[in-house]
Length: 341
Image (spheres, one colour):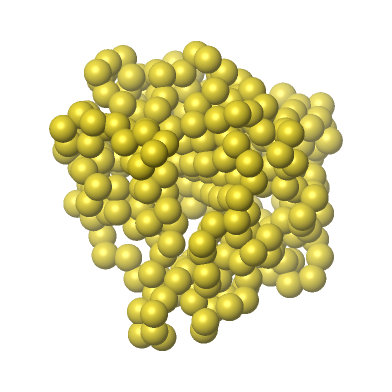
């Protein structure tokens, strides 16, 4: 499919990439949903927490959050509400350690960790063999989703997928976050990760998992790390079997997997994303026939805020994503609209 320019137009009072990024992250008020939590035990003795919303298990949309996010992130909760209005059930997957309780192993999550999403998908597809599945990933979760789709190729019975603000080239994104105003985002995310790792190490020690705690202790003091290049080299590469940060970025950047995707997939990216540069965006010849890339001139990072007036913000992604999915998912009568919808 070609690269297209969507109809997104930012709210006039948020016509700036940083305002688009920060407003929903800091100021959005999301009413809580009455969701049902389920804990899946993983084959390696850990767990993954899922948060379900909606009762129609004829369609299930799996949602993946971004770095330092969770199922509580505003973009996840907002989309779950929107999907239910369309008649779709959704399940928000919390990456390990992100559900409010530390996980049991030193292992955590990263931009290329696809074993857990595959485990969740396989578990649910076996439980609901007649269900139509789709998946949506944001930021880091978008990179994980695209990499998984490319790895699996024809092996998935997935109706559709959407990735938003995915860091398609991890090295480019890490360098971008070392420059200009983007360093504010870098500091916030690294501070969150350091707190996450410190709390995990303390939990492993106090719960009697000394061997796992020692794996984290051997990483050394993380306090002085001020770059994703250093963090990913010291922490992610060492914990997850990569040679170094270069090996991690090379193997886990999702852009190289786009040509192998066999599921109808929409990529939504913003040209002004403060986490990226134009070099991150793929060319049309890198996209598989079923992959559509929509490049917005504005929108920030997982922002895409629209509005008719200053008193109310609306979220374009919660319109665009269900519209795309509805082309490939059955409605309440089992009818699929298809491309002509």
